[in-house]
Amino acid sequence: RYFIRGVGNLQRLGLPIERFCDLVNTFANFSQFWGYTLTSEWFKHEYIAYSVHGIGHVTRVMFWVHILSYLVKADVLTGITAQYAAFIHDLCRENQQEDHQHGVEAVRKFSNFLKRTQIPEHLIHSCSNAVIYHCKDDNECTIQDLIWQLLKDADALDRGRVGNPQGVSSIRKRS
Image 1: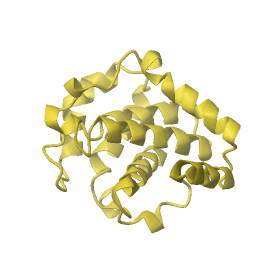
Image 2: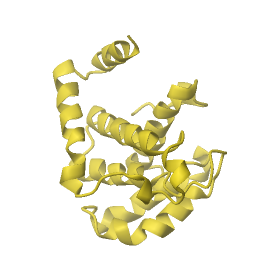
Image 3: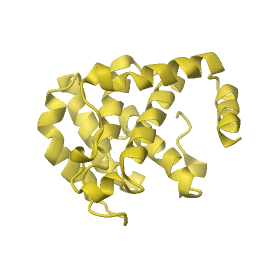
Image 4: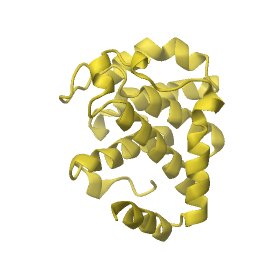
């Protein structure tokens, strides 16, 4: 029931059901496109992989990034960069509590990984910025570009599954 209601809301935002199905199919093939799969080994602590910020959360945030990228008509490179930001954003969490440093640690730990991806050199900084500031107050981020907006909003949309995420009523207009 909630899924059907959600798809109906997406249709009202300009995402026809046929296009939604296409997006689901392309999302399902990302692991083949990238050549890796999200498993517990990516996480700093294995117990986080099976927690509220684990594999399921990261996958859903990546999916929301994919949907939002389509809705805002982001170019392909921006969408890919935002996907990588979503992939690493919570991999270095220590626990489930509010933590403003796990983004910094994720960028530090995965900087070489990001350099080996399809992200062009000029977007690596934007990807890193999005990951660093996804867990901080908006006013702390000085580069609030589309990649940051996509990650921040996708993360907030997924937090909606555990209750009304703080700030969901003020999600940036563009996405």
